[in-house]
Image (cartoon, rainbow over all chains, first blue to last red; front, top):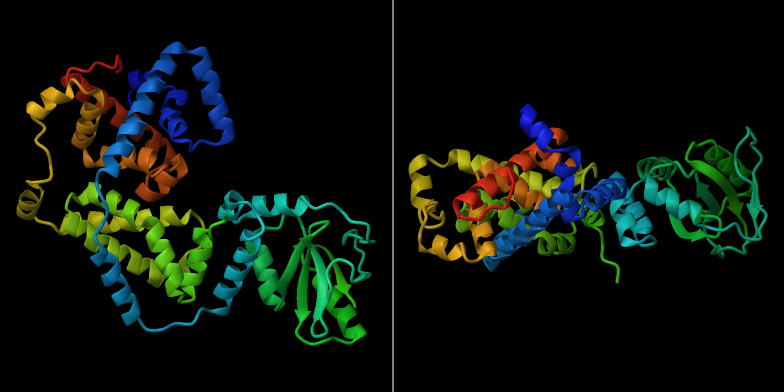
Length: 227
Length: 186
């Protein structure tokens, strides 16, 4: 871009096409809106951008759709592919994504990231049950009453709140490494119910397991859930 | 009603879920087809290419890392395949196949009519943009891709994405001026 063009194309003007398409961040969109309000010439150019947007959509929509043979041929090829089983890591990641996706707005589910998780975890309200956060080097364990969610007869369960800054990958790895499964939540306080063992652990083993899980950086709080 | 996210579908596809593949295909195949068609300008070739693209989605779902949106990932693969197909095509094939689909940039009767219809003129000028410019205009306006996403799909820095779009729009204005429509810019 030469000097003349650079002067001509202010940063704001460069962003107009994305503003018209609605793909700018909130902050950028606000900058553009403010500039449009102050500059009638820029506003006039923005109208031209909107015309381009509309006609580009119309042009593309006029292109029609592929014939049904595409889908038929594609799935014939897929059916001819060797059968496969998903690795554990894939199925677990999928389960975690599905779990969170089912409990957040669609836009948050799409991001599947730390922001969505943090918002969701922070959204909970601490209930009237005695819970203490993990931190400050404390290693004592806690037990919750079965008020939050009832534990079935088999298996061992814990209530977990993840660190707000923990991202999806970290949580997935934590669950996978420790063979944990989220089975419920989030409850008040952003607590999730997690199966920590398929069998019913004895009290000492349960305490040891909770202590071990408590050391993980993604865990903000964990307590054994007893019946 | 909540729909299953693309990321979740990819996770299921990685596990061999054929139904998830059908859902993902139904959700994206028309747009991917149009993106490819605008590049290769031949319907049969575009259909073959999107079949290849979605077969790669099936095969490579396990490798999807979620660093970009699924649609961005698919469009990146589609673009690569379309460019490869264009490279394979000889000049003669290009002449034969596109003769009926690429409009003559000359000032034909349709152009005369278009002068009376700004929208039609704009569409005609959009067709006359270079492949590079058409691509970025389509990605931004039709496929609703952000600066960062276009950067991933096209493989250029974000600053270049912005300036390329600027030049595409500038060229569009010049073409419109040739059609007798002066937008007052550039």
